Image (cartoon, rainbow, N blue to C red; front, side, top):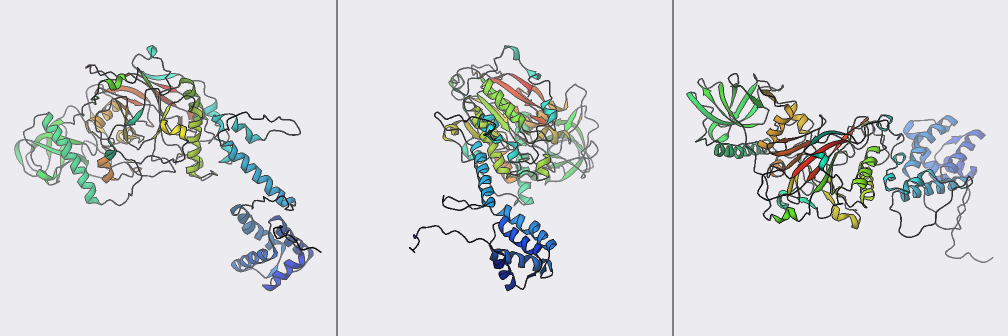
Length: 610
């Protein structure tokens, strides 16, 4: 007989009952009865185990559970359920590439599962260019169900691939008011809301690179003394602006009793851990003149006021006893100037108007992970071809039912990459610039404020020029028009803490927006909300307003609106989904003009139902 070739593949011998019993006897494991031996042979074949591996696994199981060495059918069933089934999920079946391998019913099942996995991966890939043969579907050779995801870029997110229960949300699908305008600003009927697909309209960070947060950083290492330094620095900065604007000769001290009126600089606080009210308001003085001392405020003589914890103010009043300051006048902050390009031709270079879409997550209803709203948004972008689309998180919402219960089958970061991939493929023909802003509710991203931008290095080359990952918060420059962006729900946080007394008709949203602009910060509230993780060392560098933006975009759980406050167009586009129901998104029309007129370049805006 000729010797076998050196490169021949050896075929493993079939598993026998004698081999299994021989290995078990080495560890003094005994079994009696044909049903037990048949079960052992079945375990070897169904889980692709050799007799040595089976004996080792059985010994570990019997020892850890303190079972009788005399094996029983019940013990083998428990062993299969607790050990082998988990082992199969943890160790994928090996790939067979040689055509000379012999297969039985079990290895064939593994090959079928590998083929399904390859089809699933192919469904997430961009179809290759060039002519392709269209497969025919017959009763004998039907199309697999997952193959439908390759026909359209909007079907890249296959819900069944990352959730065991991914049925579409019936409440979202049953909506009847899609496309209706629910809030507007300016002459919206005279505006063409179709863009030019990003032609001559390129967004870029407004702040210089050294003042822009571009990568992750270490946090949760700050000291109380460092936080205090940042707060005192902000107080001095705003105090200097108030002193110059209101022509105040000098500030006084909270520590010295005086019968005459005194003007002091300080920060509003609360004398307890409860909610701020007119009786609990205190003023914490500056370090230079008041050594950081606190004094209660008497607000009964003020006709109008609006205060919140952390607000830097200048107060005029009497402090006759040194224990309470009776306030007679309140100087609030002043906004920063607007930005005007050094080159007036910068706006004209854009060639006319620029249409901006503003969308805030979540991008799927709370009772489903089918991502229907995201697919509907992609259709809107493909149809209207806006120049820029700003997408606020959360993309993978920590408050989603299936995220909270850990029922998703894919890692959070992988699911986010699928969202990005769907957006890129679905909007490539439109050419729209996509701006991604993270949220602290994103399960896959750093939980800190200020929040670094997303990292997605595997972008296709043809999309890199139109994809922009920005931090939260940030300022964006679009042909000289400055947009302030933040995904943090500051309206909700400040609305829960602000107190006011007003005889006019000003609403709470307007007052809060005025505070944001006059306090020159994306998050002037202190202490922050419990759900916030603020790193104040980075806060001083990346959370301050460099200028008053022409447009302030501040998504919130509260009701959507568009309004002009202190010359700035402020918009809350709402969220794309509200629980299980459909939500809204915003549209802006920008017409940069720097001809000397002090008009806002945002000429029109509207909030639309998805």
